[in-house]
Length: 102
Image (cartoon, rainbow, N blue to C red; front, side, top):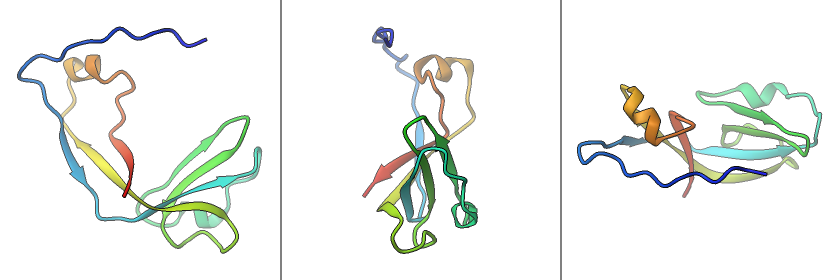
């Protein structure tokens, strides 16, 4: 069971600079245990996540073969640095790239 997270308030001078990247991405679902296909690593951005339920691939839109279960029209919000220990305190998992569906 996940542990509850206490709400925190960031200092008044704390902020994130976000940049919307121009690349269009697909989020594809592969079968659990499936090997990562070569097409999944083409393009300027790739993210592969393996769980017991599936293999998820975030890749450049249009590289997945027809018939692959994918959602399209995803973009990325990039968090511009530099990161400090203070910023990590308010962003527990500290991703530098966030997916965003458009």
